[in-house]
Image (cartoon, rainbow, N blue to C red; front, side, top):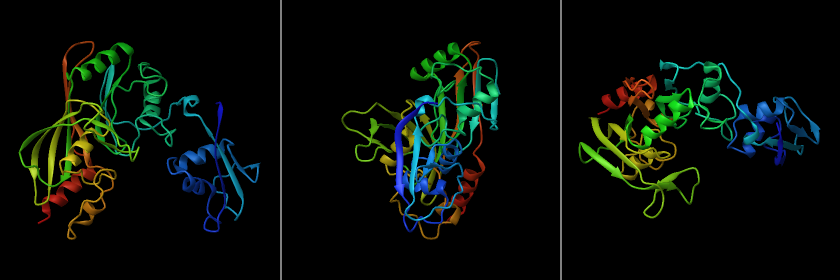
Length: 319
């Protein structure tokens, strides 16, 4: 692996003395996980007072000079990892998987292992499409880390090209369930607003009057309660954070969304399971597509994961 000149350097402060070096590294660069720093330390990329340290649990001494060298992601080809997958359907051309919340789809800064791609490489033994490059083999579309549910994976380039085109032509039906704060004014609705990167916060997307990319989300009410609702959302386009941004833009932020529901006032008497729900309550529950090779119609539906089931029960019982 080639090593770049990018480094993290710091002197151990009085507040940091006595803590593990891998934890201290995360305090100085929050976009990388502790497990990632542990991996780097074990592979010899960290120095304490200019001496190589291979112990992630090393306790720091005040005023020690810490230097850690960051490898370039482009040189870090993912390797297979034996991570369990919930496979809903599989043949020689594609897979339909139920992605768990908390799993990142492909390697990115701070997530160099434990991703869906690492799991797919192990399960498929190299039988994945290469159109997405070495970092994204088989990945036809993505779900956010904390969004759960159904995803399509292509096993060869022919299937990948067909599925990608089908998505762009809106020939694949992708439906989600979202548990949101508030109640829509109408039972059915369409949100058509361009989405682009937030110029003030690069981690967020936002509605843009000028620029951005066209985005269309259809929604309908499945259930409505005193101060929350369960919506079905149908994607007509597939922009980053699309459902989350669109719903927040009309005053219906998804419960638990750490980016787009901040500032929403939660009723004091709400159950703790609702107050502490820590990921966006968004689940890809339905897919309908034409098989890329056999041309048969495939349809898959999956229920809510346990955390969203418990959330649903809590808001149903709240008066």
